[in-house]
Amino acid sequence: MATGDLITLAQLNQWLGNPDEATDFDQALSDAITATSADFLRAIDRFDFLAEDYTEVREGDGGTHLCLRHWPINSVSALTVAGVGVSASSDGIATGYSIVQQPDPERLRDIFFVGGSTMRDGAAVSVTYNAGYVTPPTDVVQAVLEWVSLRWRGRQGTGITSQRDAGGEHVTYDAQAPAPPGTLAVIERYKRCWPNYNKRQDDRDYRVTRINRTTTEKVQ
Figure 1 (cartoon, rainbow, N blue to C red):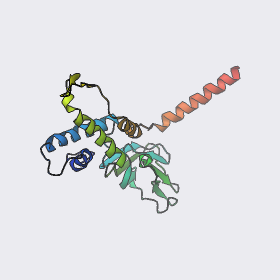
Figure 2 (figure 1 turned 90 degrees about the vertical axis):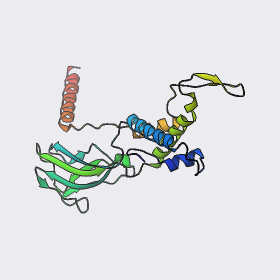
Figure 3 (figure 1 turned 120 degrees about the vertical axis):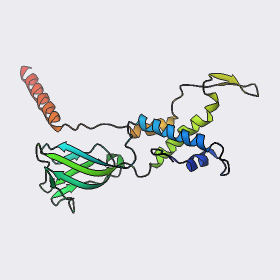
Figure 4 (figure 1 turned 180 degrees about the vertical axis):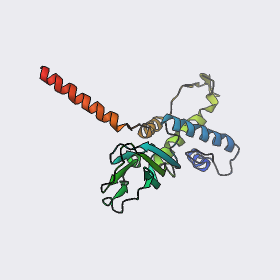
């Protein structure tokens, strides 16, 4: 199983109904798994989808909310503000940082400073953490299985737009066929949506909007 593969050869063989002793196409199927997994990750713009270790260094804005660039968060091994370590809050209220658990792992990307702890304005905030899926979610596994299966079963039509089979039936191939509908739906669920990391710009935009609205109201 190559790094980045979202399904295993055993899962694909079971889905295709291949007998255990049939190994003639194992290499071709493994290559199809690797290629399709890469296409799925490219489609969702998340080659960080599987669990890895990261270190992020950001500029503190004086606030209490830090949205990390990789998710879902699995663990935080170190967090410092201006070189001073910040410990995890014992109960989400005591001074430190807290990661609020979410029923949807896709929302598990935020660190909150609690108990009076903040990201000091202009200070370097460093976070060392592990994020990403340790094992691919079941809907992702199913989506990739269906996509690889579609490609595998249509491989005989590669480079061909249409032909007649042995029974005389005319078969047309769609060379531009997208992923199956179920796979496309899963891609939409996991597609990266970048949050705005620039809180100062958000604040400026908000103030400008308020000023413009107030000015317009006065003119009227």
